[in-house]
Amino acid sequence: MVKVPETAASAPLFDYAPAPESRAIVDIRSSYGLFVDGEFVDGQGSSFKTVNPATEEVLSEVAEASDADVDAAVKAARRAHSRVWGRMSGRERAKYLYRIARIIQERAREIAVLETLDNGKPIKESRDVDVPTAAAHFFYYAGWADKLEYAVPGNGAPQSLGVAGQVIPWNFPLLMLAWKIAPALAAGNTVVLKPAETTPLTALLFAEICQQADLPPGVVNIVTGAGATGQALVAHPDVDKVAFTGSTEVGRRIARTVAGTDKKVTLELGGKAANIVFEDAPVDQAVEGIVTGIFFNQGHVCCAGSRLLVQESVAEEVLDRLKRRMATLRVGDPLDKNTDVGAINSAEQLARITELARVGEDEVGTTGGAGRWSPPCDLPERGFWFPPTVFTGVSQAHRIAREEIFGPVLSVLTFRTATEAVEKANNTPFGLSAGVWTEKGSRILWMANQLRAGVVWANTFNKFDPTSPFGGYKESGYGREGGRHGLEGYLK
Ligand code: NAD
Image (cartoon, rainbow, N blue to C red; front, side, top):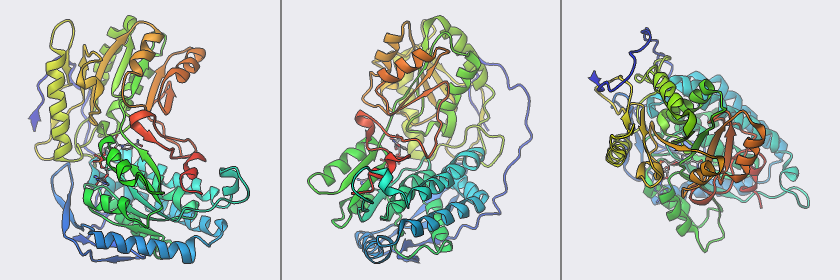
């Protein structure tokens, strides 16, 4: 165990007995091919390893799809669209979606353990958030499949687009897959999806679920690989719709690739959300919301509340209680049901977080209450770990306040008036989400109107629901996923 230096905090209140979830329920193959036209096939390209970020153990060897493999997957999707799925009634399509949703529920424990092994997130999150919310997306969109004429106003039932090429990141591997695949299929499209290179395993398990659900071959195709595979997919001339979730940098590149084509595009990109706490907020609840906002999923959340804006009059009290709460967070084995903060997903991501935190340390200095703070916690020696961290004395010009860190690192800024809070919250190139903590309903409504963010949570944070549209302003992207709005991007 490596001791994180104790800077100021109370010792843990009491010890827990470890309660690790068994991994016996998952059966990980030593190697995986691509899922094309309803079958697992060998790729024509090379392969790559996927590792457990909590232990660095190699979990499996996965095929890296070449341009030719991507082409075969797009062709399979096109055939399935023109011969079967695009012609099937919405009512029939819904049956498959319901079936998939039920199988996800039936295999929930297996999926949750696999997600935690491949991603590093705590089992209580994959078990209680990722997997049930993924199933909920399939249930929700199954309900829309035969009601599309009500989803998009116009004459009669709107038509599907054809083949959707979808590229997703590693932070919510199965949930992002569900956000992409469920509305696409409900609207009558077929898909080729590329999961992130560090977290391909639950997408491959989902391929098995498609087989189990008797989904017609070619309706869902999974091509694994890294950026080059994603690039081949979004640039493929026979893809009608590109749906991407990931970094703003790659989103820009994709926008350039598809510019001038008639492909429809939705981009769900990065964020730097403000979590705004007013002096009349219930402090204990707000502290829970701050913790959920930035330490849920190790802060690997596009809409993470990575900037805490706290009213000056209560800043000291909020910070004090926040530190006490942070000292009770358990960091460690993601399979342990007690764990609150799991492993960082990859060595590359850990290096990025470490570097930006180092910059932040130089930026804020150590005078006038400013500084970097983490509770004392034991980090495992193997694997990729970063302790929950808070920076005080942050100003708007600091990189730590402007750049997405995508890790368990919170920047604290203060404000005096609501107008100043809005001005600071909106002073970012991103615009994905925000949180407001206050007892005053009228202030919540006023703030929600002023904040340039796609989602504004009031007295809560990081709540996801399939009925609710999600998406960004400015450099956080365009288009919406979730809700009725999520269907629009998949219909003519
Ligand atoms: P990333 O952009 O590096 O990768 C995302 C996906 O794109 C991966 O599957 C990757 O292989 C693929 N890719 C890489 N280069 C590509 C290219 N040139 N063409 C096509 N595909 C390419 O992002 P990441 O590090 O995996 O994920 C973290 C980012 O995702 C963060 O910025 C986060 O905010 C964002 N994100 C956004 C949302 C949202 O809904 N707005 C949700 C989750 C994550």
